[in-house]
Image 1 (tube, rainbow, N blue to C red):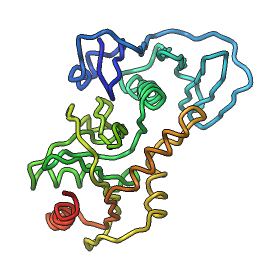
Image 2: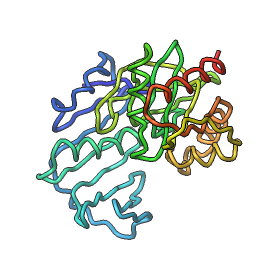
Image 3: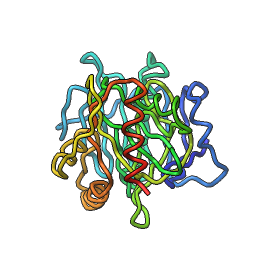
Amino acid sequence: MVILIAGMLIDINLIYENEFKPLKNYKVNEKPQFFINSKFDSFNEKLVDPFSITPFYEKYKIGNRIIQKQKKNDKYYATIEYLDNGVNIYNDINNKFIDEYLLTQYAINYLVCNNTDSILFHSSTIYYNNIGIAFSAKSGTGKSTHRRLWEKYSDSKVINDDKNFITLKDDKLYISPNPWCGKHFKENNINSTLNAIVFLYQSKENEIKEISKAKAFKLLLGQILPPNDNNKDKWNNIVDKILELPIYYYGCNMEYEAFKLINERIDKDVK
């Protein structure tokens, strides 16, 4: 299946493709530029001297390839091979759909962030009155719950509930939708400009706080992928452009008034 994401044509072949229901919304009949292949296969290449070690993976550099050995509960359960034109994923025979879903997130993030002017932004986004709004916060704060308030009380539609690509094109920022959309699997293949960002925190009272660009930058850093050696310049350009947007630091509950206050402020600020 060839899919279109952030202007990229990707031939994607998955073990559990039929279970990944949002994927079909991005299908196109065009010639691919890149690929993502996922299969059950042991990966026996000898690897030494990882250049990056985390609790979740080890990374190795071999020629023009990056090999990522994925770990769960201190055991290897997959190997991801990053190439210039695509990504191969080798799954343990016991891997299920949710494992493949999470592993292919690494693949799509790598391809989009390295081959387009895009960054990954952990946020829940909506399309409202011809503008795009992103709600961001630490996991568990209530991004999805707040997004549902907008769906309930306004004529808005979810773009992506968790994993958004922010793309810079012709000096404008866009939300590039994609089927990787978090645990609720809420998304629509809607293209939109990005016009405002709301950083949420939990509060009994609803209050919009004015914040400096330095504070906004710090909040943003906690929710985007950092640059690598190949994309530092474009990463900086995108971040600089994001910081020009209306950005709100919003303490709120999950009642109607929480929607009403920020809705009125955005309607006032974003023309």
